[in-house]
Length: 89
Image (cartoon, rainbow, N blue to C red; front, side):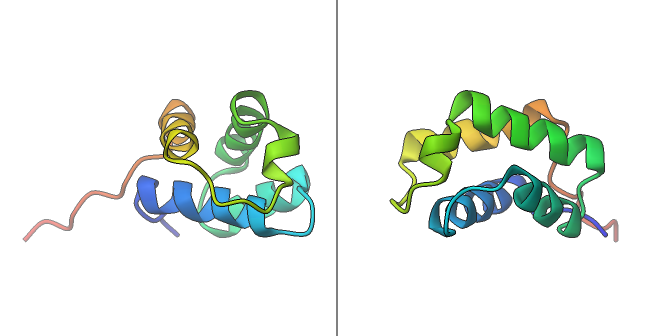
């Protein structure tokens, strides 16, 4: 399974982490794997989110700011999560 476009994934992951009933690194990591990331990519993303956004913020229920969305996109890129290429015609 291929990961959805990175920016959409960034928003979905961050929104899901923020909207959940508290943040769970293992739960978020599993959701990332279910979305098509490798276990290494999922671990990298979770660690990056905790470091650059903070577990306390991820456990909140507020909408993510534009800055947080940008950081999430950077984390995905740093972890090798890329948008799937368009099919060739």
